[in-house]
Amino acid sequence: LGVLTLPAGKAQLRAAAPGYSQVTVDVLIVAGKETQAQIPWTAVARPLHVLVNPEGARVFLNNVEVGTAAKVAPGSSAAALVPNLQDWGFLEIPPRAFGDFLFRAEAPCFEQKTFQIHVPEGGAPAPLVLAPVALDPLEVPLELVGRAGGLVSVDDIRIGKTGEVLTICGGAH
Image 1 (cartoon, rainbow, N blue to C red):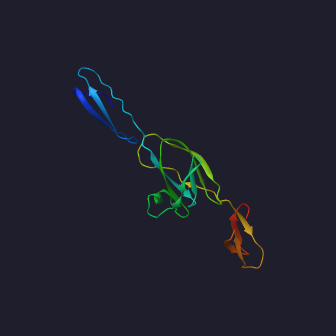
Image 2: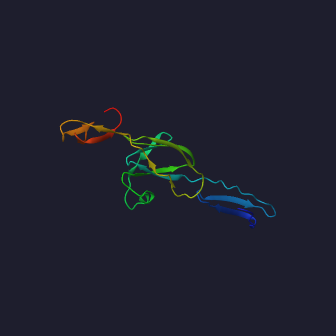
Image 3: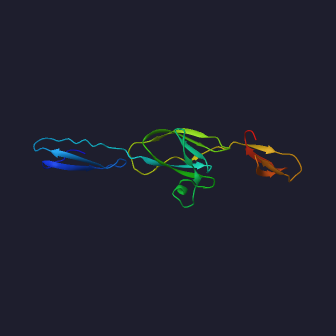
């Protein structure tokens, strides 16, 4: 802040900075003496905004589930972050203090993605927007031979007809 010249007596100093809580400090100024005031800055927690493809993906921080990415609403602030909204989900994660976090997103039939994120101390109190996270599908082609037009279900979900090349999630069914 620098040096301020104030009259002797009690004074109340208020300090504010982006990304920190406003602070009020009471000081007693003695005539002819230099008085120092320590400002106890406290970083403000920031929410995290993340776009995940596919919508419905579960999101974890430090292995604790923090929510599920919901469908992006056209015209929303999240919509401006991705050119093609089809299959994308958005999640606002409640405010986090600064520091490092292990981020993980997962969805059935998709490879999970895990990486470190850093929430910096200070800065604007606005949400921290993470880069969009696209999960890679775990799909395999499946061709069923039989009478054409027969209905095919996997795990009680109708996926197509015989005579077509169908795509299903890898793994046991």
